[in-house]
Length: 182
Image (cartoon, rainbow, N blue to C red; front, side):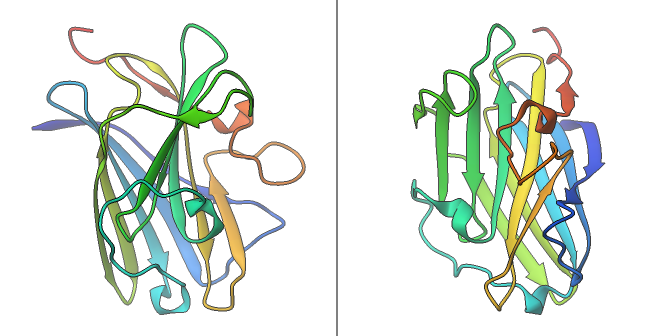
């Protein structure tokens, strides 16, 4: 059983629109225990998007170069944060940072569970992951969407001024409440 924590629309970066997408919504729930359930739903002309083929759920770097969904969890005790990259192929990556884009290293986390489903009007990526473990914290939720022509569009809860930058503090725009009993 899970309880819904939030449902938010991601917005495209103004310099990188993608008219074939009509909405990108993220729904967050907390499962029993410390798992966070994150469901990204892209609505629009899904056939116009470049989606990676299904693959084994392996840790893979540079997923952000193509269609990829991301979840960031800020460390409530300091400037560090955790980043997950989640592909519709089921490939994933997780990184820890000591501060803004510094001290990057592979995060020692359990592999997330990723299930992608698509039809002509909707792509859904449902993910179960540990972010943040056991408590409250600020989250950043984002996506890189690639169309069949190779153009990228960048979606987030909020964007800082300038170029797309999901690591920027402005993108950590959702406060996750503490788990019951945490």
